[in-house]
Picture (cartoon, rainbow, N blue to C red):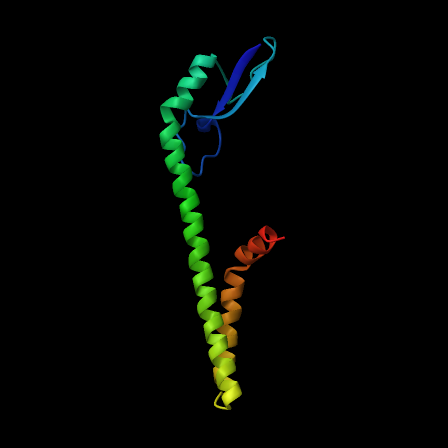
Amino acid sequence: MKLIIRPYSALPNPLGFPGDYPAERRMVDDAFEVPAGWIVVTEEEYRRRLETHYQTVADITAADEMAKSNETRSKLAVLDNHFDAIAALVAKKDAGTDTNADALAVAWRSARALLGIRRVLIELARNNQ
């Protein structure tokens, strides 16, 4: 048996992991023909590649998760502002001081905001099931 890995240099790498960091690992029969993009390594070489770049990969992963979290919070804050505008319009309607222009402006901004965060809302709904 031999150990083969496919490093990130052989794959699309949008997060920018180090090129020699293993993206995949497989144990294969010695007669197995190594596919393009894969390389044969020893267990020690595999561990060295992991250990050498462990902190870098952890930092990149954490930064990506933080960016996604910040994006979600930002989108939810925008949505919250639109709900505040809707609540203000409802209060104006209840008080009899609203206008059709007020209602149309709030409806337009709210519709655009909801479309902008559609994926976030769907994901939140899935996570709460």
